[in-house]
Length: 508
Image (tube, rainbow, N blue to C red; front, top):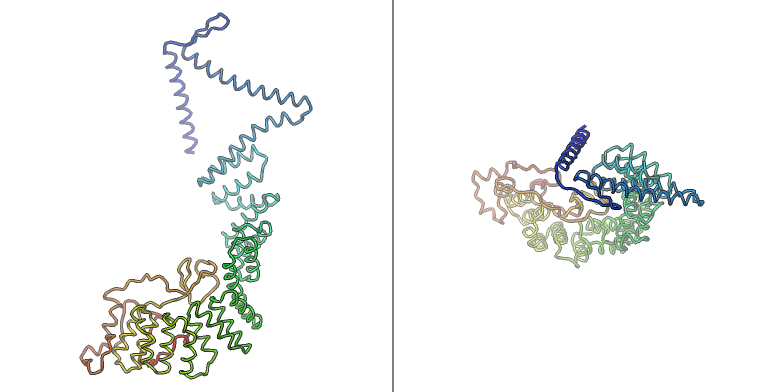
């Protein structure tokens, strides 16, 4: 409606302009003198302009007539398509111009204009492989999924545009949430163009999302074959897929195949922690503890992790605390200053009731890298050395609000997961989970939970004689109210309920 009104206004303005111009020329003096064959013609200003416009039109018409005469001459000489080609050239010129304008409108996000140009191009051009594509994309831009789907299906009829049609339908099904249909279309698109990188990635993602690990490994091998993924990345991702396949096989009850898949995954990527743990369990089932030890040591050197320590402890489950300390020293000897190694050895010494050695093993970790676990270990050490309840509760209160330390964090969206998985549960990205400390976003209030150590007791090693039994001591035995209520794993145990803190890797 508005556009029609604008066109009417522009038309009236053009007529008014022409009228005003003609009146102005008629009132103007001067003109043009033309002499032809001794005869002089005097033209006024308005007549001169009309004569010039007429001359231009006649020149254009003369060229058109000459072209038509040439086409007619060729037709008379046996070229049966000469005249049709003459008229088709004009139609093609208009069609390609409309097609070009439609692509520009599409790129600028104007779906309505793109659709109008697409219809004009369809009118003048006999090239459905081009015009249908423009129509489908314009329909998608307008939100007309039905029109887009119908047009993409038309593209399937031509072998040159079949891949485009399948790819367009695949994206539509993905937007609609029909992953099973999208997976089948992705497989068809991959069969048509196996070198297409986007199709490879989409097929791999869909196969991983649906648990088709064998298919995903085949697709990953094709990416390596066509050079779209580096060899080291291929080895790592193939290990992730092999591990996922092993877990699925294990869930089905076939432990032998799961064990072999896990060993293969560990061979491809020794730093993949879950693969190393499953491989060690497989070796233990086969009665090969030495192989299990070697696998876990290699994984620990690459990335110390509590689950590796737990699997390492399972190799000799009935050993004495002193024997376990001696055996674990060989595990941590290559990275003794690592925070995980220091906390691990401190926990082992606590289990052996050697609290001074546990303090030496922990060092200043509770100051340089305070986490819930390191501060809880300090509470256990203080309890083991006979410190008062005020001191122990002070450490536990500080542990209550400390960072939890390394966790499984997605490097793409920074989502934290409790367990490793091949894909992120939040953004569905593949192989992005790493064992690291998540970015801290919490800001402590100076009057909130950060004041807990001052409420329940100091964290200095005071003797019982130094602690005055005043009315403030009654506060220690009262439940602590905080403005930030922790839940789950964030709650540290009370020293009265748990006089000894067991090693974290055992509790894992």
